[in-house]
Length: 193
Image 1 (tube, rainbow, N blue to C red):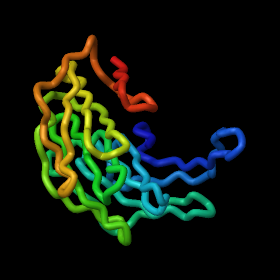
Image 2 (image 1 turned 90 degrees about the vertical axis):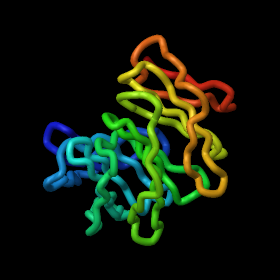
Image 3 (image 1 turned 90 degrees about the horizontal axis):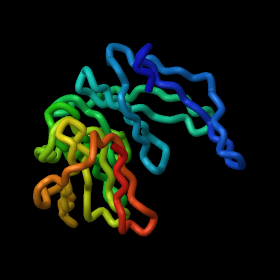
Image 4 (image 1 turned 45 degrees about the vertical axis):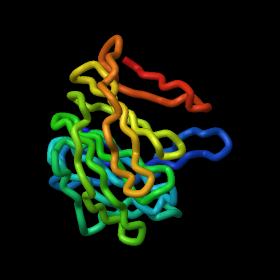
């Protein structure tokens, strides 16, 4: 997402080198302002652009041959506002929208045929200024980096409903957490702050 001119750019990835090549497609985001985050379904069929200042998530279809994005007729308005990141559950048609200023985590279901999002529930992220999140590969835990309160919230994910439940108090960080990644063996959570 390009916040300066409110567009989305598409790139092709060279499978041998990993280098990016601009496809020449730049998609205007219409009345949407500041595309903050982009998430793609593993199938590559749909892309979601999160617009921080208008509280919307716009769904695009992807042309597999050219990479061109086309707007789907529906948009999703985030209940608490200010979507900052969207994380996909590893084994369910569910996503978690990290909201920056509310601070909430909104659980949404994904219609894999139409790309439509439907809200299931929103809960407090137990911190402020939520910036990023990560989910373990089994879909059991969700961690949220709270830049506004310098901590990380931990949630368990219900195996049936996939809804998050806060697990204890948020853990303090040494500085402002802005990104996180799990180690390959998922024994360690690395927090960039």
